[in-house]
Length: 108
Image (cartoon, rainbow, N blue to C red; front, side, top):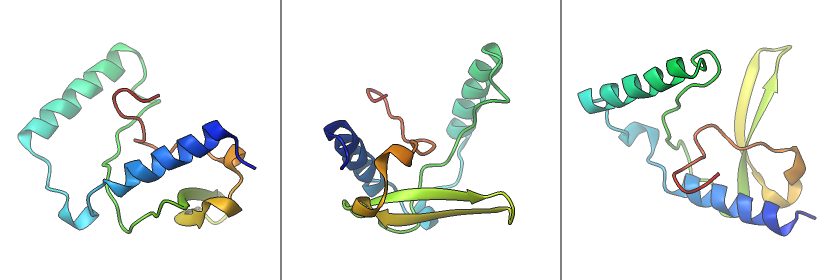
């Protein structure tokens, strides 16, 4: 059974995904976006982390419901990366990691 902290974390992730725009409605990059990304790149260079961290466009392809987690699985043998929603009650919370881009200001 997941701990109270794991339950709070999974609810926070579900809420974060619920607010994302559909990928087909995300506006194209603007000059302001480019300036922001250049600033982020400069910070990564300054910290020697350009080859360690990257940026993801936060978006949605389909709804992820409150009782689900979006789980990413990698099969190096077939060179396949699969992301799919699974019901929370069938997922071992201890085996999951936070998805890219899930951190927001004020959250770890």
